[in-house]
Length: 223
Image 1: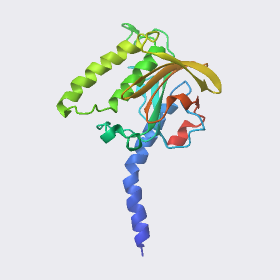
Image 2 (image 1 turned 135 degrees about the vertical axis):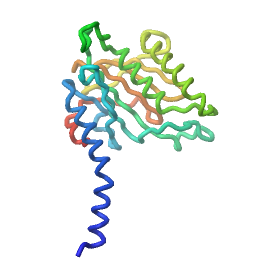
Image 3 (image 1 turned 90 degrees about the vertical axis):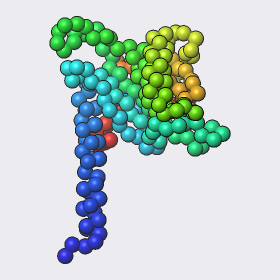
């Protein structure tokens, strides 16, 4: 006779099935990449999760992100008194393949090369995607997001401008120069590695100044 505990276990497995399949599909995308993925180093002991990979028209994996800490949700981030203890605390590391100009899949043109600016823009847009300005009506957020996305691109295209400062952080144990900026919504940084990829990162509630990055040894473990 089937026990109650057995029934509960089967129900739980059925409920977890779609989540497991989704995680498997996500990690499969990461495994297809011909470049290494980066995350925070082992000094970070909190939760980690995979986000979606970005692909070119020909299916080649171009970038992806690994989250650390609280998984951010799109909601009003300005709480009473702006109490940091009640806000989501997270850092997301974006790895971007360093690609030169290359032909599009249909052979009709060239795809834009990726650069540190690409990583900075992806990080900036990532931060915006989980930000909801205080006192903003729901109907206005799409307009605000479109405007801020354009601003993020302009900023990413001018990494030597006054909006950015320089921050040195370890990458695989080597001090590495990053372009860094802060806003009321969080921070964004971008730089390059000796492994031939560009790194972007964004976060809120976790200080960027104490971060260190390293290659993810076993990305399949995230499945």
